[in-house]
Image (tube, rainbow, N blue to C red; front, top):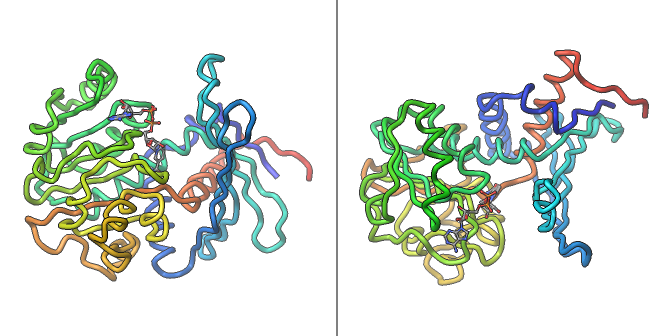
Length: 321
Ligand code: NAD
């Protein structure tokens, strides 16, 4: 088997590689060729940590594996990232291990790629203003990936603590995009694509904030109880997701479903749009929403791509198993 440590990942894989890997596995899911297995997530009762694993199998790409890790809140004080994860890939024919791959950067890249896939397939072609809500670790990846997939001309952004938006402003400048810190009202009125990437537990964006035809990639809500959008938005939007089971249980749709405003049948897996089974945006002026919950198959798809690139470039560390 090979090892691709965290320190090697940035030099090996691009945002475009991740976009292609995530788009392909979402399509494989729509063809019933790829499946996520039930997620385990537990409080360790040690170091205040949350630990778990997500696994899945993509039959088309012959990718089988598990991402394991979680959240260690005291890590930052030690100069280590709080979120830690590692991917283990197996040979689906024999069950033998194929690769151990650092999962931290890959998690950020695959999450940004999933939002970018939704923008590519669901945003209006004439959208020019990107809105970002959030300014944490994940936000810069979202900005770069969105800008790489769509010809935005301007970025407006909001964060609970506006001073944290300086990092996004610098990335926008690097990308040649004018950048402005705005109120939520202005963001909703001006942005034609909105990416939400916060760890909020209460709605931030209101239905009344939105203009017609907006596409929202709602990426922050990945746990029971988290929330970024007023459920009325989901009630009137055309709702897509990476996986319907996760959308209604831990994704943004959990709230609209709990309020009886929508049901699982109102949510479409975005893979169906990628494969052409669903038209995606049906009316120019409708709101489209992607509930990006984060699935194992996305992690495995980008880890498998990294493992392949590491082998091709001769930088994979071989270990005997
Ligand atoms: P972070 O801790 O670095 O940043 C958190 C962000 O949320 C900051 O901008 C902060 O200001 C904002 N925030 C926190 N509480 C808020 C509140 N009550 N109201 C408004 N804003 C609030 O986190 P991150 O790594 O950038 O991740 C952001 C979110 O995305 C987290 O919830 C994380 O779990 C989620 N996430 C989802 C996926 C996925 O696949 N969907 C993948 C990775 C991370």
